[in-house]
Image (cartoon, rainbow, N blue to C red; front, side, top):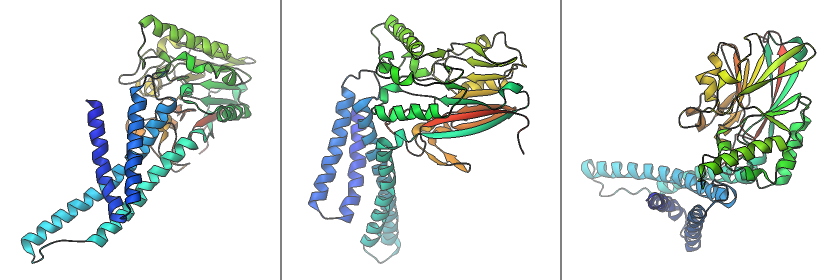
Length: 408
């Protein structure tokens, strides 16, 4: 039934969008090309999603099938909105003329042609952007630098640098050279520690088989630390048994170890400089709504004092809103990911940022402060479902901790 409804919706939108083509040209060749392309995109999407997926998600050809149909659908929906609006105006004006005017008909072909041209131009923007995002944008890595001030930061950690990456989703990758470039980019930041905030895979530990060596190259003086994200538990794929799912989770934990990463499971470590130290805490995934709630802040912070300086890793930023920012132990800085910035949006650094994901998550990209406590939501290293990024680029966060009051 779902497929039937989707196909009907696709065809209806396609037919309406086709009116723009008919308005602008009388070329049978273009008509045929339009129809063939529409059928290929729809047919490929149906075929890919009717086949079993090795990792149970939008990897490989499935991802591209999703990307192409998304590009076509968004563009054609915009065309439909334009032309439907024009038809409504035509009907209203024609009805008015019939009732109150001597005119027997209402024809405005030049107006319809003009609106079709405008509609085609507007629709071309998301179409081109989504295609660009699939072929270039998903590997357009950006290093974003932040400096945060804390009056109670231990002296020895003044100037301490943290590199954060998140949401690798290795099962989606299709270009090893680009990933190796990104790993080098992280190492070039010369951070004191590298923190990974969850979603190493889409679903299965085997997705990392060909990437263990690559990500083992991440290097920092105080090591690499990590936590689990919602996708790491394997909940979004059908397993032959619950034991198979648990075995997959154990295998994934071992992957962290093989790469030399220190996986924190509702626990903490201390990073030391002489007589000074800061606490590094890692909680398992906790997400609002239907997401897995394995995170246990009380367990992870057991034994820590309020005066200890704390950096916390929590994959889903909703846990910060739910508990972390209000906790009496005062967690100074939380690092999260999860949202990907929806891989789509508009950002003008220092001035404006927007993405549809902001209507779901209060904290969705960048630095936020409440109660003198900070959270950084990393936009993600990889991608999921739509195999691309538009406007919200893959990110390496570099956070420098400074002692003192925040400059005015």
